[in-house]
Image 1: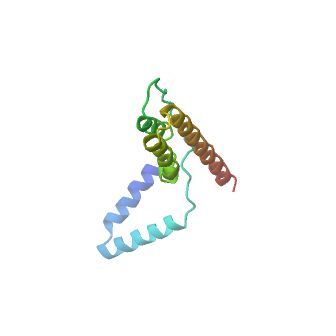
Image 2: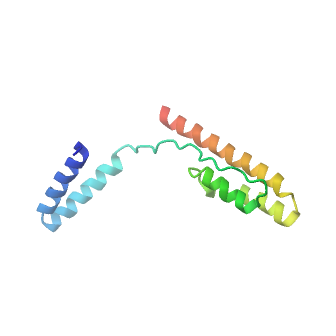
Image 3: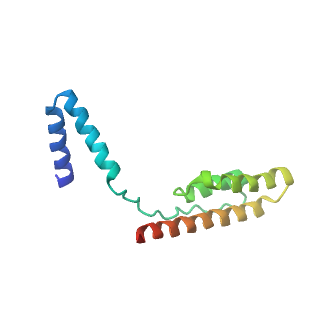
Length: 123
């Protein structure tokens, strides 16, 4: 058993031995310590490549790119993504052109993600 698991078992044993009021105090103290502790950044994720099919709809391209870049915050990209989709659906812009731009958009956001992680790591 590793040290972390052993410490967890000890902490659980202490917790279970306490009366309810002290359990609450112990939990509050643990929450306080956890809030003060520096956050451990999640490891940087690499894209998960998915091959672009010859014929692909814009919606399927967005799904493919979302699966390729699961680490990206899609909410930050929503405005740009929906704008490109609207150009295809409402203005008749070719799907291939829109998908090309979507790929650039996702790649750009991925590069920004990597750069932000590196800046956070160097601080």
